Amino acid sequence: MSVFSKIYETDLLIVGGGIGGLMAAISARQEGADVLVAEKAHIRRSGNGATGNDHFVCYIPEVHGDDMDVVLQEFYSGLAGSFQDKDIVRRNFAESFERVLDWERWGIPMRPFGYWDFTGHSFPGRPRIWLKYEGATQKAVLAREAMKSGAKIVNKLSIVDLVVRDGRVLGAVGIVVRDADKPELVAIRAKSVMLQTGSANRLFNSVTPGWMFNICRCPSDAGAGRATAYRAGAKLVNMDVPYTHAGPKYFSRSGKGTWIGVLTDYHGKRIGPFVDKPNRECGDVTVDVWTSVYSEKHKDGSGPVYMDCTQTSEEDLAYMKWGLSHEGNTTMLEYMENEGIDLRKHKVEFSQYECNLRGRGGIEINAECETNIKGLYAGGDDLGNYHASVGGAATTGWIGAKNAVRYAAQIAAQEAVEDSSEAQWLADFTSAAMSRVDGPTWKEGNVALSQIITDYAGVDIRSETLMLAGREYLGNLKRKFLSTVTAPDTYSLMRTLEVRDMLEIGDVIFLGGLERKESRGHHKRSDFPFTNPLLSDKMQTVRLVDGQPVVEWRKRH
Ligand SMILES: Cc1cc2nc3c(=O)[nH]c(=O)nc-3n(C[C@H](O)[C@H](O)[C@H](O)COP(=O)(O)OP(=O)(O)OC[C@H]3O[C@@H](n4cnc5c(N)ncnc54)[C@H](O)[C@@H]3O)c2cc1C
Image (tube, rainbow, N blue to C red):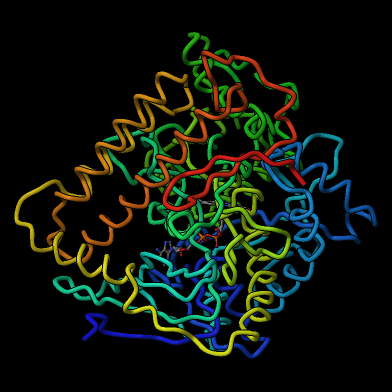
């Protein structure tokens, strides 16, 4: 008899009920498909958009004119960078305005001042592509729309593995984290699956290593999409060049593009070339394009680097605080209020944050959001060849789900997954980890792996010998951790399974880094300190073939 307490059947399983997952659910329901959303937290308040966002990257013809290429060019030059396939970017921008209008119709204020307001993350004198909106309620609105559409939502369900046979996805297995002592093991038979689990975080040390969850991204987005896809044979792409964000030092919070000030040194001298006084339309885009400025200036002694809002007008400060409040930065605003921090008088020290995988370093898709596994689709911050963010999560969710439904319509019936080797592994692992009385906990595993990845494949310096040594240490950790870990309750089991995913992803980071014999972005090699022009238009992929990792290069399209 199966130990799986619940077996679901659906046309489309969506893994992750964040921005992209909920958009996928609504999109698929419009086509009349059965949809099940598996969300490890709760769809009303989960993922990176849980407490709001305030910039929706998009192309609006009445604002930008008829030439979409102008907008795409801005997208590549700024925060998003060039690790993206252009056909995917084009496909998504072409649909972005329709999704903006959907959100507005559903009740998310997309033009709170009555017009399309594009500010922040921009170069002076160039087109602005980040639409300011009022996103604090976005998750509640999308959750309501998804439920209204008739999608089946299972909260607290963390997906652990996909089941793929003969290159085709058959479903997934996971655990429900509700009863503290007894996890419910769940199997989902699905004709198609869409991964929407967001960015991969907690792989590198946080800026305050004692506080592992003090990071600028949702700490529960721990790379499940990437790891499950990889184990199932899907390609991961651009895993070797990490991403870092920046913002107020120690108070790790995304939202740098919302600040209206000038990046300056200790003496108030501006650092970047873009603005010399606060500019509401553009912000100081130095924060987006010189992402290592804080660490570089700290190391050479010319730091610290500050966000200086002392010259910002009262009106612009109010606008900035309004933006921050819609971007989930309410605790930081409250802290400044409580501590008497007055931005007209006090500069705020900024720093580079922990690395994460976002916008690059993820699942490879084509412009229809298909992976190389039949029936498996992916979207949002799970992707490695498209810097999705909010706008892209909304559009990929929409596009991918429509294609997944079309694919599912060709599949005669769902197949059993509860007797698969993946199901058996989960049952055995759960029983072993939960019955062990002694052994390391998930936290020890997480601390050890982030320490190793930070030290041996971090942003400071990489080299062949460092990465070879680091990969060996990580492999040793993986073997020891998985065979000795103890998970005294269901919650710990979920975190333990996240660590398993991170160990897998960490290995791919090392493999990719070893294969990239050049320096590019945050991948800085002491043994190959130059940027190789021959790799400028290339994407690196890693996948498992017969259990062995294969690293390949292909042209960017
Ligand atoms: C404070 C902050 C401000 C930001 N501001 C902006 C902004 O203004 N503009 C912008 O473009 N971007 C912004 N971002 C980034 C933006 O929020 C993300 O790009 C966006 O939310 C990505 O959507 P997603 O659906 O891909 O992932 P998410 O919204 O992160 O959703 C992923 C979901 O998957 C679930 N999940 C994870 N693992 C599993 C599993 N194993 N099983 C089941 N479910 C799982 C998670 O719980 C989560 O609900 C900001 C981020 C933060 C943190």
